[in-house]
Image (tube, rainbow, N blue to C red; front, top):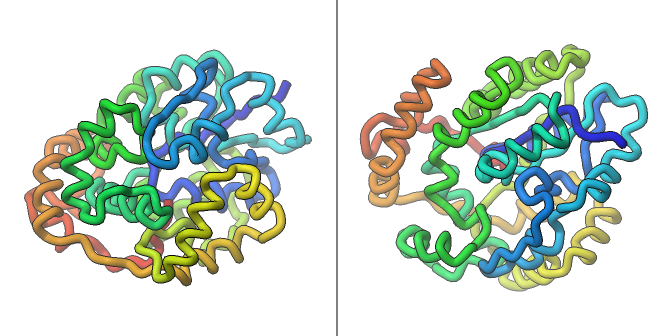
Length: 317
């Protein structure tokens, strides 16, 4: 029974879909379909998340039985590396670490992290674009987050909590050791994609000279321009069988181009950025120490987060 020997474990809205796409192109890699089976976080459970759209987005599609999970990799053949990319794995570390140790004990782990303010706003836009976010204003959604967490809305709704990376990451470093955990920053992926992907290939011990296509903007967030298109997308999201049919018929690149064409990209206000900078400042400082990386590009004081961000069109999940 084939099980994965590498996992992209998160974080959500940080570029995991782009990384998965780059890795899946490599001839020595087999990547699961779907990208996010959520097995490590939810194995043995019966998901019952209660947020808007959670039934179709995760409850009905999460794979929780080992045999069904193994079937995702049945066609891996002689691939040197076999993997999947569930962002729930990093966030629900209390459950997922034990499941990795049980079902994929030798797996290498890949983490990608992004400015937590940008990540939070991207999540809000992502759920708004899919027609599920009940609040029109990001500030209102942030105020509502404690109620959502208490009401068992799934992880994508935890706009601030998912961006507290330090405590999530340190648990995996303690459990598996630094040699098995490869951390990527979104800023590096955006600025130097070939360098980042080569380092990933070396980490996975596969041919590092392979160059994947990196120009496609994957899983961008934004506000829909067309209500009709938004309604159609929401219908697709609510019916997993329809979503899978479209994925089978319409190539990935075309799906992304169609979806991106219908999005506008509003800016985050300085007021909300300052509010979130205060929330994240201590965690960012701890993360910088843990990674031994200069995270000043993410800002160290309220107001710095936006001012120091590089211009970017590669808003990837």
